[in-house]
Image 1 (cartoon, rainbow, N blue to C red):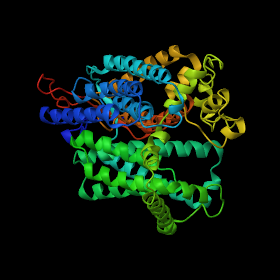
Image 2: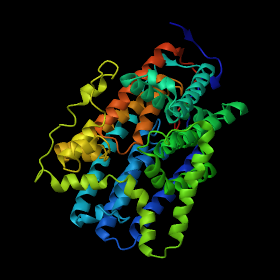
Image 3: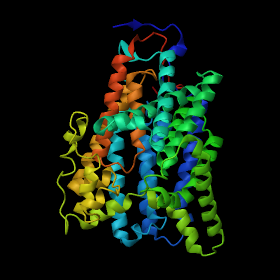
Image 4: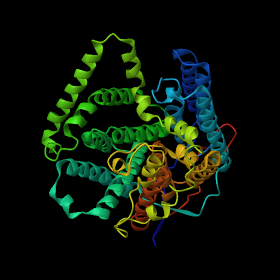
Length: 508
């Protein structure tokens, strides 16, 4: 097995320290966001009971705590858990104060009990995570890494393959018919996982000014192309997730938030969001008009834009206040899983008993690749079991439409508050171990790439345990293959890490 010792600091690229000046700026941004969120929840929302506002503030404060620890330099490594905690603001906190139609049907006591459940879950998991990553681990003698040159070429190829795969799917190209069942599922999972890694690494290097001008332009072009082709199924979550991962990586390396890029993409995605409903109604379920070739993209997007403009013009002609409320709440209605936690807490253990681990017993089967088990159950089987158990869907309905639950609501449906506490311990440990494993590791090492992969899953707030485990196992197998085939041992040079001082805290 080959070993190499790099001779230049640039070849040993790792997650750097944040200088004291930038750290202060980061903390100022944190406090500004925190103050804005709490002020909005307490004072700016109308016609919301104070108990619901207080419940929302509890969750928001608990979700912001790990982010404060990371921004202040007390927590080290990649911010996997802080971003996971952050998702609880729009999935559990804000739905309590944005007039979510389903959340409104529950009592104030239910709101408070659910918020305390989420808050307790975040406090327990944050405590465990922080205990594992507040100090760096002992540095090993070597890491398995990709070289910068080989790594960049590989990741550019992955992004290109992701764009080609999207084009092939929506173009219904013939070669896809040669890939059936488990092989297609494995290929799709591998490409999705690798695209997340490629997006993070190249965006990090873009922010760190490690890419040439030509490479920078190529990366931006491929990222935009991936987002455009991924959105052709009228689901914007894939494009949004890819862009969010790129923003996180760029912000960590450049120490600056790309405000202009965020505003441009946010405006574009919000605009297309208004027209995706009519596009789905027109094209979903069809076998001919749904597929299109690359030269037809401008026409399809022009049609999509037309529906969005039609919706906006229609809304502008309506002066009804309730319509404005619906527009503001639409995002939180779609992102929320608070209603699922409220449902499970109201119905269980009476009149509907706990599931006592029924959705967890399928996990061993989901880890086995479909190529080895053609009759493997669906990754969403656990979600289907939840919806059937709580009489939200029949078995037939669950095969065509998925109602997301999220990890926390699923844990309560299985074991009540004990299940939530157990999930907090597991996730705090898993995210803490993954983060600690990557502290001090080069960006192109197995450890860092695994942490990036975990970060991409941290944004998936609607995942059930089965979907999470299936996706993680598939992506981990791909990363393991990369480690053995493309990576080589790299000794740790003595200059690799700066000294840890009180005035210059090291992040990993």
